[in-house]
Length: 465
Image 1: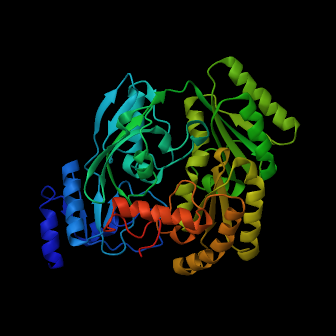
Image 2: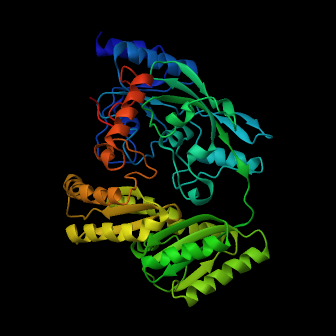
Image 3: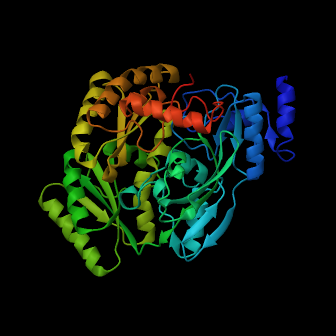
């Protein structure tokens, strides 16, 4: 069958106008936020029902055509990139909240529901969906599940995995499975739901997700603290964690703050220049908690761990302090950063960062390096900014050379080469630094069971064989 005939057949599986093949659409839907690979899909389809998703998957099996899932396309690992003539399956039109159970505090979502949409729905019900990150306004629940998204609240609330009560998925065979059926306790063998969380669409597509909600936090309050060096951040974390139930603990460097200040639309937290900054958040549910936070701040100053600090006194101040951290990724995107999203256990973070910093400075002394991340859960974001004089390809080639050394340090500390962005294609060749050969073989065997023809997002997590 010719390619044209194949696409004509595919077009009949979705509603009129819900397949696109024009160059602009292929470019837009064939990529995510990474800039490493040129998008080259053959078509984009927009199913509106589970039945249409099943039909598309069965068609792909019949004709051995690869499929790539597409949500908000905010990923940073190229897991949603279609670079080899795949058909992109976009869930933009499967974007409804289908049901809400007030007693169980659960919401049934289609995969195209935007993260912020779910957050706002929860707020309207007097509840809270705590998985949060800078791309919440465009990322979709299906993509969050596919990458087990984390974000800024992990220290208190955990990853996306912790909030998925149940899933309906279409496997690589086109079969519909209902996984866990929203149960809190279910001891009936393998929890297949967990296999699909973080699988990046390589086993099948999520077509419905039941997400858990939590009580709304009471009077969230943030503090930004300046420290004389990175090593001081860890005792600050311990001091506040011992006294308060933290909802977030982030860090960023002076270079990151300088980029934010260069925007001109975010006020500086205070005048004292500091090499590193910690941003922590907690519920100031009463005056006693607020006083405890201030007393802990004073203790940290006395110990020499903190040079200056500020605590939010209003919702607007809270938002402004968070902008210092949340705007970093968007702001530095102008410099086409080479990103590494790495993690270790929290206790190993200082030594881990020192080792990696030394490698980068030794090999690329002229490159500007911006550090930030979710220090409270051991997740660091290493961003190397592209000099204007280098082309993108030259810059990425130079950065790729240092990856081996960076990931050797990750392996030394028993860490992860990808804490929350997934593997996709950008980290695929480095998977052995976090997973043993035996683990990888079992992972490939699992994929073969759910996707025997290898049509579901091939080339992601591990190479096509």
